[in-house]
Structure formats: structure tokens, C-alpha cells
Length: 273
Image (cartoon, rainbow, N blue to C red):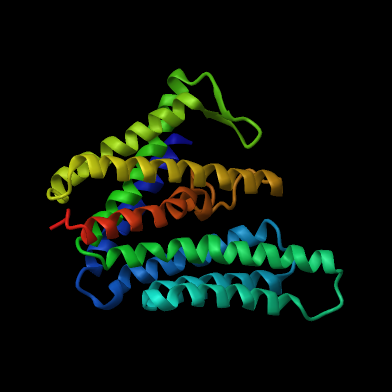
């Protein structure tokens, strides 16, 4: 399993880094924007397959998630939130027709609405971060800090993990692993910023790394909760050693808004040149 994870990461990470660097200076950062759109479609499809049995609901859900992603990523800030809420309303309009039981309709609306925001809304923060000053480095810092935290948590948990973190949600995760993962996220963030964001104070970067690391671990646990509710081990099988795209992106999704806030604030208060 470990070698499969390493092999998959060896393919995905260069692709991700290339799409980010190629996006610098291009309108809307379109290479990275399109890569994230593909990721949004895959994550949404996996998520909806766990709970929605009708093909029409799943197709509509994927379309709404991608629409939410594109509209909130591309529209000016004052329009992004209303656009996201319109996508939520569209999920309601999709479910209202027909003679199905109202309880089932409510369940479908809740699933579609949550999936639309969870995938499309959260993921849209990355293209927006990319367009900030030195945004390519903030995006790389955030995504790789989540990955570093995941790696440190895995090895720390296996080595010294004793106390269960959330046994009802993810029995294998430990408090020690979570602490190791958090330290890994902070350490990576500080080291990365030292080389590529030298004008940002180390204390500020450490705080950003901690916030990203905590959010990433929370996102991982939230997706574990979803899978446990659905009765599945993995969200999919597209990534050898990792499971599905949602399994790999869960922490990245959750860290997106936090990363954007730290990146935007750093520029606003003038700590990043």
C-alpha cells in the first residue's frame, strides 16, 4: 500500500506543481483552474455516489458542484457568494418536481446542497488564492503543508500512537499522530516560506501552517464520517494506494478557505512584498 501511495504521489505532485507554475501570468490562471475543475467533478461524483442512487441526481449534483466551483472562482468577490447560493437553490429546484416522499426529497436536497458547497465552494478558494500576490507560492504552501501533515501523522501514529483521536469516526487515527501531523504542517510551511516567501514573518507563516494543518485534519475526519455513514471504506478507486479523488482531496478542500484568508491578509497588511 505504501509504495502505491508513493508512486501515485510521484505522478500527481509534478502535475499539480506544473499546472500552478504554468498558470502564473495567464488569464484567470486557467491551467490550474481547469485542473481543479476536473478534480471538482471527480470529487463530486464520488461523494454523490455514496448517497444518491438515481443517475439523474448524481449528474445534476456533479454539474452543480462544477458550476459552483467555476462561478465562485471566476466571478468578482461581491458576486461569488450569491452565485454559490444560487447553485444551492438550483439543487432545491431539481428535487421539487415528482411524487417522491417529502422526507426522501429533503434528504436529496440536503445531500445535493452540502455536496455543492463542500466540493465546489471550498475548492474555488484555490484559484482565487492563486491570483493574489505571490499566490502560486501560497497555493503550493497550503497543498503541500496538508500533504506533509498527512505524511507526518501517518508515520508518527504508527510509531508512537496510543490514544485514539476519534474512534467512532476513524479508529486508526491517534492523538499522537495528529500532533505529529500538525508539527509537520508547521515545519514544512516555515521551511517553504523561508525559500519562496522570504518577506513573510516566520511567526505568521507558522500560524498559517498550523491553521492549514488543523483544517486539513478536520477535513480528513469529516470525510471519514461521511464514508462511515455511507458504509464504504474509500470514496473510489481512481488513485492507487489512496482510494478515490475525494479521499486524497478531503484535507485540501477543508484547508482552502483558511489558506485564502491568511494569503489575502498577508498582502492586505503588507507583510508580503
